[in-house]
Image (cartoon, rainbow, N blue to C red; front, side, top):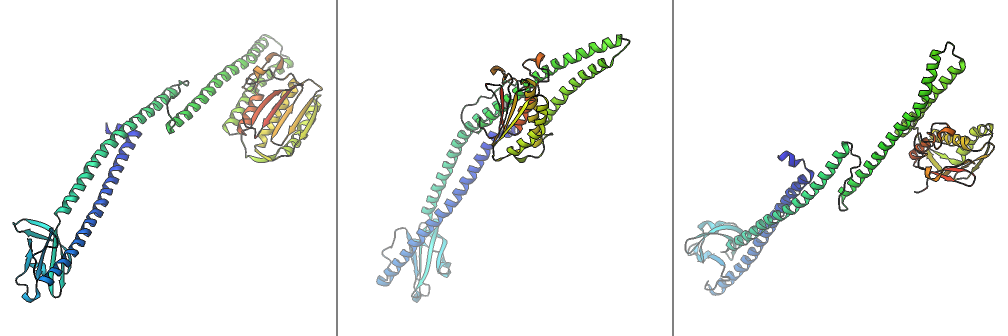
Length: 437
């Protein structure tokens, strides 16, 4: 049972706080007791000094002790002429060996005239060969100390009770909230990804809960995408596999197999392999295994390099290519991944733009733009085309529907923003490296 409750963070912290408070309180009590006792003794010593001066004056002037310097004081004088005989004492019986004590302050035991023993503070001093002894009872000081100790004790008990109650209530509320988080996580672990943690307030637990909720939402979205991707992959593979199967069945029943039929089967197999290769490529990029060292690259220089590589290819396909650059700061990027990104954008433009039209590139100062003169993307399709294996018109377009998905993945790695905008002539695809959402 103890182990169970000790394992609860809130209760463990409460016990630790109570223990620390008790230790601090006891330490403060010991320090206070020390200084209070010291102050009381200093006051007694000062009064004894005054008493001794008064006794000396009375004795020197009147040779009589008819008057006490203080009603609370006890004193004794041993005249040197009497050789310690005929000691004159007032108010109490002093021990006989007291006169042999060194001059100064001492704690001694005296006996009242009624025979009661009590503790006293004594000052012994030799003046004109006479030994003067003045003493004061410590009973009053002991009572003061006792009263102070009782106040400290009961205030400590009362404070501990109040603090224990307060901390217990706070700890219980905290533990309830922690248990709520734990239960929600157990639900999430069991596969209920729609579970959300609902806590009131604005403390650390709420912040943790919000972070967990955001993570769960992302996990739910990823799982949804995974299910959709799985369905899309199955759907996209079904057609070429079915065609391949039918083709092979025909070839089995045929006595003669032409090279054209074999080439057609190989093409269908390559299409299936290409789908898997592209999906694996995206997964590797997302996991980081395909990432290389990020280096600072000037977008203007990158634009010229890409244009020298792909400009001739675009023109060979029957299109015009135009490059514009703007000087700007260097952008930290994986250059190889950026080439893959641009390659996919060029492939999309070549696929959808009208033959003979112009494909325009803009590099810098903090963005990359690729403009074509194609049909653009319908407004209600813009959020869908970046999902894996999604195609607006699968019959007419061909392809895999993975190009923009890979572009989106590479943008996320570079913390860049992908923007798809329809212009009057076609589509503008923008990669913004420093643009705020």
